[in-house]
Length: 123
Image (cartoon, rainbow, N blue to C red; front, side):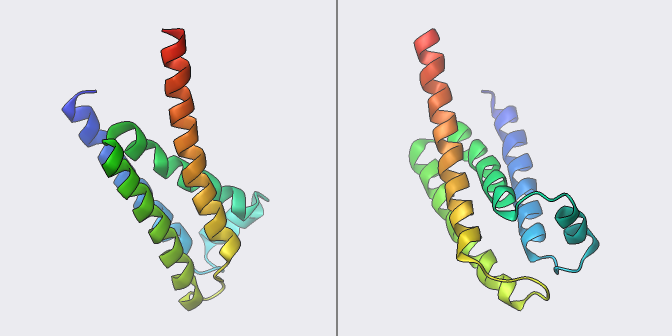
């Protein structure tokens, strides 16, 4: 992958991280949070999907050690955001949310590594 493609992916990844941070720290009665709740999608699925998505760039773009550090950082970020929700009106800190975050990180990594194994086997 070319250097400019990596920069674009990292930029999009950073925007996604900012979106997750904002989403996790919005007050529970905000219009966005009410719209998300109205979809009926389980919040644990949203946590899982968000962190699975966040895993894709580090695992596909960075060297293994850097990718692992990024995943650790994302896990810590998820935990800190959960704790910060204690300070946000209408939000709560839930261990199950952090578990869904961690499962999303693991799921994203497994998805990428499985895809690579399949691609190698087919090639």
